[in-house]
Length: 128
Image 1 (tube, rainbow, N blue to C red):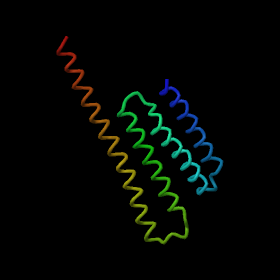
Image 2: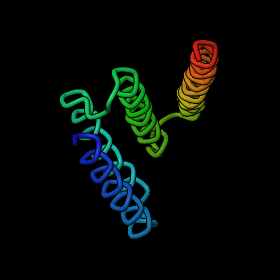
Image 3: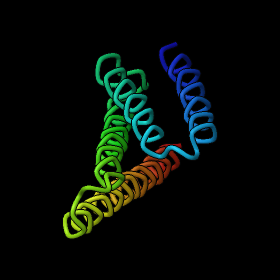
Image 4: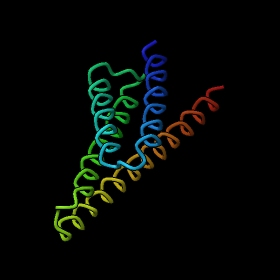
C-alpha cells in the first residue's frame, strides 16, 4: 500500500517539477530552490516512512535522493555570480563527482542484483 502511495506521490512530484521548470524557465535560481524544497521533503519522507518493499530499495531511494539534494545545493552555489571562478570550478568538479558516484553505485547495485537473480534462478532449476 505504501509503495502505491509513493508511486502516486512520485508522479505528482515529477509533474510539479516539470511544471516549475517550464514556468520558471527564465529564473534558474527559483527553479533550483523549488527543486531543493521538493527533494528535501522527499528525502524526509523516504527516511521517515520507508515506502519501498525491501530494505535495499529504501536505501537506494534514500541514496539517490541524497545525491539529488546535494546536487541542488551545489547548483545553487554555481548560480551565484558572486562566487569566485576558481571556487566555482572546484564546486563543478564536486558536482561531477556526486553524479559519477550516483551512476557507479546504481550500476553496481544493478549488476549485483542481476547476478544474484541469475544465480537464484539456476539454483531453482537444479532443484526441479
